[in-house]
Length: 113
Image (cartoon, rainbow, N blue to C red; front, side):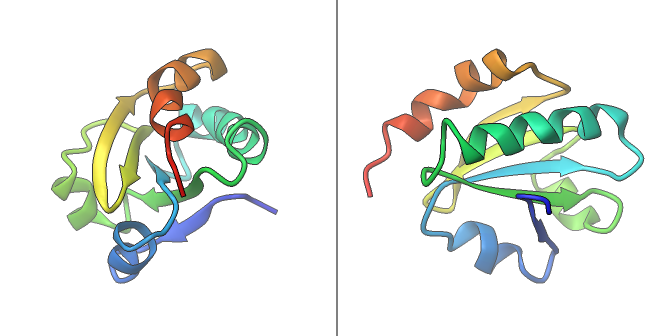
């Protein structure tokens, strides 16, 4: 079972913007090979290093064109970290485990609940 919650244009505000925990949101597509390679890395991070510190969600760019345009997603995968309903960090393309921690870790580890 995937650790990802699927987000649609109809559920985005409730699931992402109103989320209690930070949300690491992947903009991807089923046909995207780099997305499929990235997803197990993200699942591991959220279930181990960032357990209880973030939720992992996914937007299919093909079925959510308005969200894709709203966040200026030009390539997949694109990761956007939302904290308190605001995008605070973003990366594009496949990233290795260490690079994802480098890019997003300080935002998540400094969160107080």
